[in-house]
Image (cartoon, rainbow, N blue to C red; front, side, top):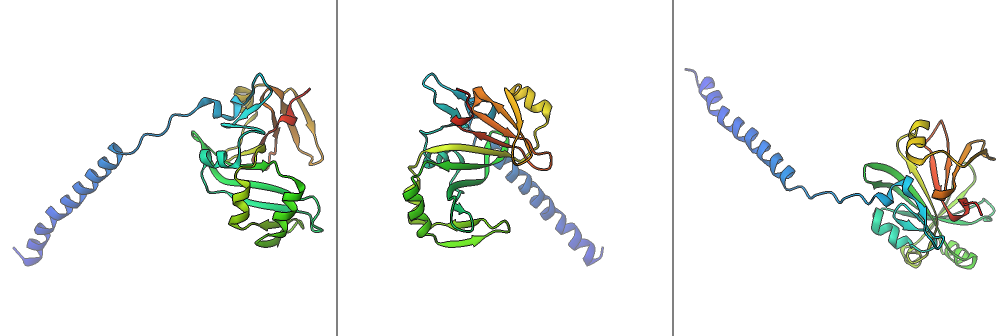
Length: 220
C-alpha cells in the first residue's frame, strides 16, 4: 500500500466527523430556534376597521392616536425620516419611511405621515442635516437625531403600505371585498375606495399597489 493510499484512508474519518458535526449543528439551530410570534389578525391589511368612536385601526396602529414610537415598536427602528418640499421650499411635508417591514408573511414598505404644525415643520426644515434634490426637483431634507427624537411622540395621520408582491384583482376581491367606488385621479391611475376599511388603494399595473389608510377615506 502506498503512502498516498494510507493518507487517503486516514482522511476519511475526518470528513465524516466534519459532515456529522455540520448536520448536528443544523439540527441544534432548528430545535432551539425561537418561536415566531403569533400573528395578530387585526394587523392584516384587510382587517382595518373603524371602532364605535370613529377611530381607525389599521396595521396594528390607530390613526390620530398611535405615535411614530408605536410604529417603530411594531415594525423596527430601521426607519428613514425626511422632510420633502418643492424646489422653492413650498409644500413641505414630513414622512417616516420603513423600507422593509413584515406583517406575518407579508413583506412590504410602509410610509407614515405625522401630525406636525407648520411652525414645527419649518423649524425642523431649517435645522436640516443635508439637503438633496431629486430628478423631479423635489428637495429632500435629512434630519439630525436630535430633531428626530422630537418626532417620536407625534401622532400618525396616515399609513401607506406598499406590498412587495403584486395584488391581482382576484386577490383584492377575496381579501378586501369589492370597492365602494373607483375613480381615475390626476396621476392617471385607478383609485379604489374601501370605506369601511378607511382605505384608498392605488392600482398601478407597472408597479406595486399603494394602500393608504386615513380617516379621510371614509364617506360622511
